Image (cartoon, rainbow, N blue to C red):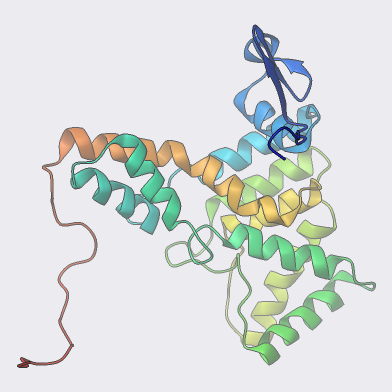
Length: 254
C-alpha cells in the first residue's frame, strides 16, 4: 500500500527541475506576471492577454478593505497576542468563510446554475428573485454595508466588456440587480463579490474556486496588517468594536 503512487497534474519536481503545468519555473519567473501564474496553476493553461488582465483585476479588487473585516481583526489579534506573522495570517485566513469572503463562491454557484435555464435573462432573473423570496434566502454578492455603489464592480465589468468577456453571467448579474429592486422595492447594488462571481463564471471557472480566489487576493492585505500591528502597536491591545455589555446570568453560587 505504501509504495503505490498517486497522480498530480500541477507540478513536476525532481533534482534540478521544477515545472509548473509543464512550464519551466525559471522561464515563468522571467516571462509571466503573478496573475498569469495564478491562472496557469488553476486552469492548467496560459491565459490570453484578456484573461491575464481580468485575473489581475480580480486579485487586486479584494486585496484589502480596511482594518475592520473579521479576517483583518483576527490577524491583528493574533499578532497582538505575541505570535508570528505566519500564525497571524493563518488566523485571518481561517476566519474567511461563508459570511466573510464566501459570497463570490455562493453567487457564482447560483448564477452558473440559473444561467443554464432557457429563456430570456430578465425572466430568469425575475424567477430567481421570486425563488429567493419563497425560500427565505438572500442573494449573495448584492448590497453593501458601506458602499451605495461599489466602485470595484463597474471597473471589473468594464474590463470584462473591453476584452469580450461580458457574457451571460454578467448579463444575468445585472438583471438580478434590477429584479431585486423591482421585487423588493430596495436598491441592492452588485458588490465586488457578486461582480467577481459573474466575471469568473464568464471566464469558465468552477464556482468552487471562488472562495480560494478571495484568499489569494486577501493574503497580501493580511500580511500588511500583521506587519503594521507588529511595528506600530503595543501587544495585547483591545481590538474590535467597543464597548460591550454583559447580558448573561447574574451572580450565582455553586
